[in-house]
Amino acid sequence: MTAHPTAPRSRRERPAKPALTREGIIATTVDLMRAEGLERVTMRRLAKELDTGPASLYVYVRNMAELHAAVLDELLGAVDLSPATADGEWRDRLVRILTSYTSVLFEYPGLAQSALVARPFGKHYLKLLEALLALLNEGGIEPDRAAWLLDLLLQFATATAAEHAHRAPGDTPQSEADWQALATVVRDVSPRTHPHIAALGTRLLSGSPKDRLAWGFDVLIAGARHTPLPEVLAPSPVDTRGAGETGSAGETGSAGDTRGAQGTRGTRATGATRATRATGD
Image 1 (cartoon, rainbow, N blue to C red):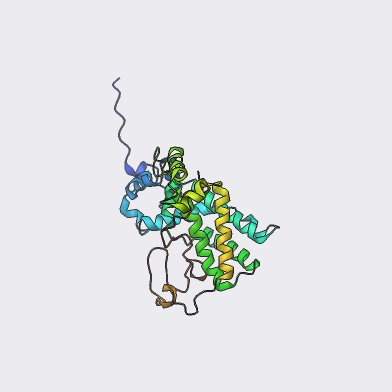
Image 2 (image 1 turned 30 degrees about the horizontal axis):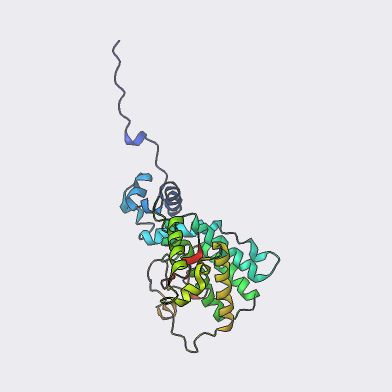
């Protein structure tokens, strides 16, 4: 008896693909990032994983910047916000939350660098802002100063994580060999040509990364408490934008603006923050 080849299944008989959703795209992006690194996540790679075309993804996210912001917000759900309602000194609890935020970024080097310009505006980001603002309020920081301090604290934390992030496997600019070379130069520098560096020597590189991070937060908090804002403030983009206008990714000028409390940019660093170079690794 002759066996007949199996007839190919029609598309109608194949199992239906799961419906494409924004939540599903973000979840798949997170999975790919954990498995392959953020630098490998492209719209084409993501579309292949979701068994769809790249054009379909743009219905749910406008560009990679918006996707990175959404992924960042998803991962911010891992930040420990419990110190906000715990007992203890408010400043210590604030630093614990900021340290947890920095640690989350440390786990995802590519995301840490992207977070310097990403503008998350989801639920986890807003919960983070609310917890930090509540502690600043508890500490008696004036509301206007708290609004700007919040931005500086998140910039400092984000820049610290981004600076220590490895760009690629084997590419470790903060490697032990690099630090030993830097320590040698600092230790052996001529006091005649560089008297201040020679006087401090390896103290420029002293301290653990954790201690330097916490000290940096303390400096910013103390400085904000004693530094008034300019008497005349220029209007923010949100203040000047029309009610129905839409800005760049993550910015909307509508009444439902969800960028965050008091106009903060949160994780967007506005300058080249390099103050943490000598933290030691």
